[in-house]
Length: 110
Length: 139
Image 1 (spheres, rainbow over the protein chains, first blue to last red):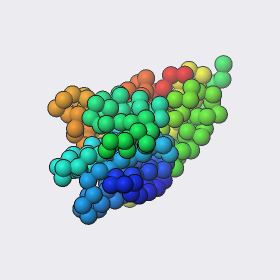
Image 2: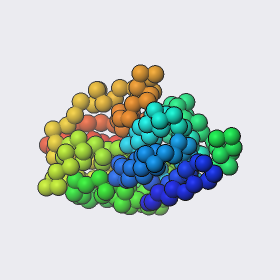
Image 3: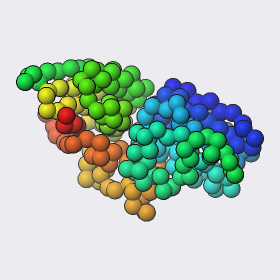
């Protein structure tokens, strides 16, 4: 499992490889918060290479979204597979986030 | 009809980093049982992660001297996962509040027990004599 952050234009794109769970959520949180601290405001998390997400992982996404909004920024999500889409629907978090089918679509108009 | 058998019986230390490899072991075995794909890729890994996480954090308070036991029993009718910790249990009713309400939707916590209930056919909690969370997924 790993997190890769890179800039695409003025958006920080985060690739989540493997699981986003209780054992690694703090690592993702810290990496995004570090970039937020440095002045980045637009974040996109791409789940194309993600296996599953547990409640702690979902919680950290909610927490990051709030923090980023407090700083006048935005967090978007992209590339959820069918299982992850189901998870977001079950928890109704699909109503809280802007979720795009692909990274390209999420970046459009960001 | 195949009689029920114990497919896995392991003990892990109270360290959340132990969850992912154990869940991977279980899901690998699930794939040999010809279950619907979603049960192996969503229901089992997420619900089991939640139960193990609860046992390690709420049950054993991440005390490295304490252990969590996972026993998976397979039958023709169901998969049953017993997650046993060394704690006193917790109030399932409080932990089961609906995290999808407008008041709770942007809370960072409180989705674990809810997800177990959503993804499993039955979730039980009992002392035997240690604290057990039993997850049952019908086949």
